[in-house]
Image (cartoon, rainbow, N blue to C red):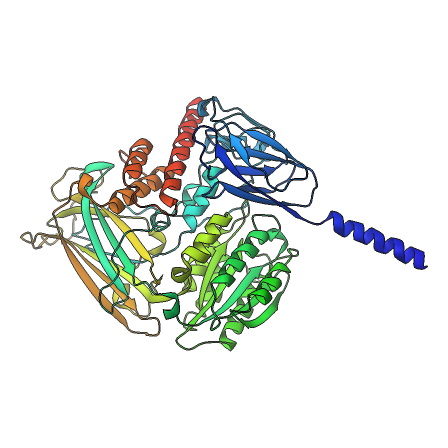
Length: 627
């Protein structure tokens, strides 16, 4: 009997030993310029373990196998296959591609999805990758299918007549998820679905050189006016807000609840392991006066760790390391428990916030977008914010996560690699977690003596009725410490013939009143914005006026020209009916010239991303023409 028990224990020990995971790390460089390459797809052959290199060209994959083959692919570079044996550090040098994107050959996709290739070069399936990403040959490439991802439909803003619609009103949006998701899709070799492209989130991904408030106000306003690069006869107006920055010692104490999805859909290196790494990064930023509880959910919700002081980092990290993915997804129950725990440890005049990390793929109990909206909206007056970190690919429920963050007085970021986790958890720690102005709304009045028509670029999901601006019961967006917001309006000057101003036949039963407006004013717009202090229910208003005196585009700030390039990029990705003369080459050139100070490398990464999208777009046109 003892011998049998001994054999069983020996077998269990061997099983445990063989299942020990190993992390393989390394960097990817280009042989042409000897520099690291961001965005390289790294796949473990024969599996769905897929990641990409960060801004420094570094990658990490987790596997339980002793011998594996890593496949490296990037638009514009030759595909490379590397066998990994004992070493856990593998650096790779990629050769520039000798073939052009037009020479792509695609094989190995499912027959029923073949028609989708006209919209994307690499919507493919299978379990083995033995070929190359867009730019070189592809034979059986396994990118993660996107058919289970969901995005909220966007009806793009059109041009409005200021005589009939003099006011444009919207809530600000500090979310950045769309940009990192778009980056992920392009780096996988496919153009994003147009509803995945929220232009305001592309614009607000980047840091801008803006002056914060010089007085006690929490937010400062800036404006700039020039010509629109995609139609020089039109004007482009930039409105920017900058929240005051706070030093770490000035930040209020935090009552945080990490709400972590540990369901089966979170299994995989770009899901739960990345969640763990992100949460440990955040734990490193916490102070002794901060407290964190950890709630997890799969088939049911449970309390993994009670509220713990922020200086007990070992205890926090040990609880995070113990997490494993399995089971179904009772996201609604998890949210309810997280609010309950946050209420139990509520800090008056503190930062009370839930941080939800999930792919949004809820399937037990309340699970629809509408269910989540009602559940979170019921807590709008609780004083507890809910921010969302999205993970995963293939089953990403972007629409659900955006809804949760919008209704939860929080922000939404998509984490596709460790570099993005560092940006959200470390670089932007204050702006991510600490609100300095809540319910921020913007209302712009256009002077019809100067403006024939105007169009807000983006913010379609944040539009408000004009009456909502003065109604303190209507929610706006929240700004964290140091946050900046950019909004762009395209303006058709008065008297200019154009293709966008609509007309209707004269009315039969009534005559419209003659337009009466101040033609003598030199002002083109008045910009107003409202905000509440974090602990107040009453809003404050500020305003600024701007004269119709556009600065030549070449004389505008680097930020203005770079933001215009990002907006143009968004219009091209969406194939906007308002893109006019938009052009990848033009926006890339302008972005390069306006790169300015780029310590973190995000603007450089954008230029690379736009160049990849240009190649993919060209190939897409060829596919459509051939069809």
